[in-house]
Structures are given as structure tokens and as C-alpha cells.
Length: 93
Image 1 (cartoon, rainbow, N blue to C red):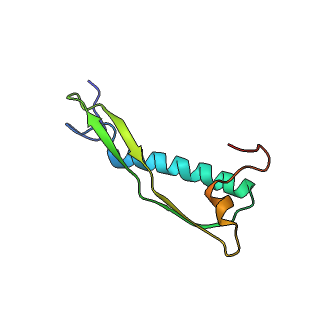
Image 2: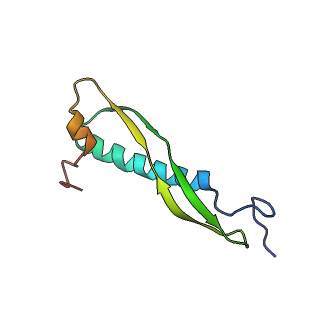
Image 3: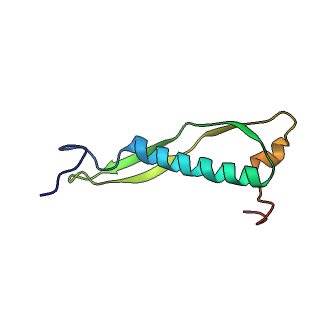
């Protein structure tokens, strides 16, 4: 029988790791669009959270994930453009 690397009785998907993964994905997506739009991001932080439902067998799935990013841009940057960055190459997303 295969054993979980997390140990007996622990969920196979932790709420912190999955909401962290969603947060990291969103951050990379935003930084990519911001760079393409010529926006200089000087700081990016996120308070991510989520609701995880764990079954009796230890398998879990997310019911919700909420992201609360805070972005700081370089002085003189267009704040409105930073709120909804668009790629210069691909147009609106």
C-alpha cells in the first residue's frame, strides 16, 4: 500500500499550499501583463485564503479560493493602467 509523504491522516492537499499556488499563478500572470504593458511593479503581496473540504480518505478539494493582491508600482506610473494591465502584443485579456 502506498503511503502519503504527509503521513497518516493528513490531507493530501493542504489549504495553505493550494491557495498559495493560486496566488503564485495570479502573481506571475499579473507581472507578465504588467511588463508587456510597460508597467514597472516594485512590490507585489497577496493575502490568499480558501475553503478546503477533506473527505474521510484524506483527499481534499477546494470549494473556494480568495486572493487579495496589493501591488506597488514605480513613481509616475499610470495607476489606472496598472489596475487592468493589457499586453501590448496581444491586446485586452
